[in-house]
Structures are given as C-alpha cells and as structure tokens.
Length: 113
Image 1 (cartoon, rainbow, N blue to C red):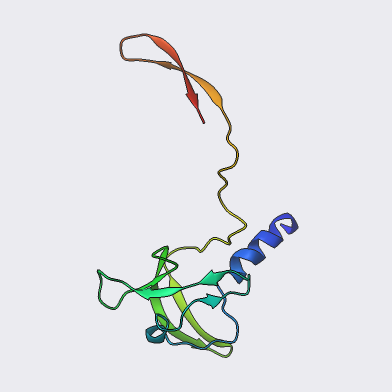
Image 2 (spheres, one colour):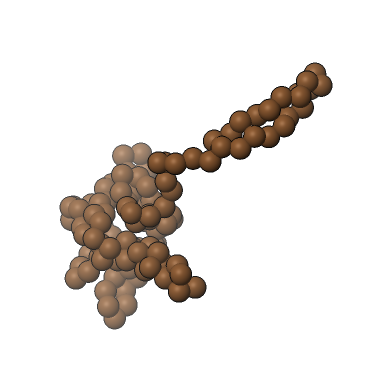
C-alpha cells in the first residue's frame, strides 16, 4: 500500500481547495481556484440544466451541496477528478497479435494497440 500512497495523496489533494468556504451557489462566480495539489479547478453554470453546477469544463457536476463541517464546506461531485500528472497516458502503446476466425472461416491475425 505504501507503493501507491503518493498517488492516493495526489487524488485527494486535487479535490480540496484550501482557505475557502464557498457555498455552491457562489462557486460559478468565484473564478478558478487552486487545489492543494496545485492544479486549478473551475466552476460554471450548466447551459442546459437550470441550477446544475459543472466542474472543470463539464468533467464533473456537483450532486450534493453545502455539507458543512468544522474545517469548511464540502460539495459532492459525480466523478473523480484526475490530477494533471497522473492518470491515463497516451505517449506509449502496447501491440499484440490475436488470431481471429471470420464468419467465412478465414483465419486472420488482428493487431491491436
């Protein structure tokens, strides 16, 4: 578990904005905010669903608002936010060969990346 502790920490920090107690209704007008991870997060009103608040250009939406606790205010979102330096990669690929038999009975080699 210690092996992935830094990744877990990054995922948690990208969901936390320090020194801010902003009600959900005020988030769209608050501008971009810096997370504990150091990345920016932004909020905007949905152009299609009245009252819906979108996070990071519609990557997530707020589904639970204004949960107050001793350290601030939390808002629940419907998706996990990805830290900018983690997650999926597109700079490499793996190629493998797989034999496939077509409906006509012809065997071919299928390449996947």
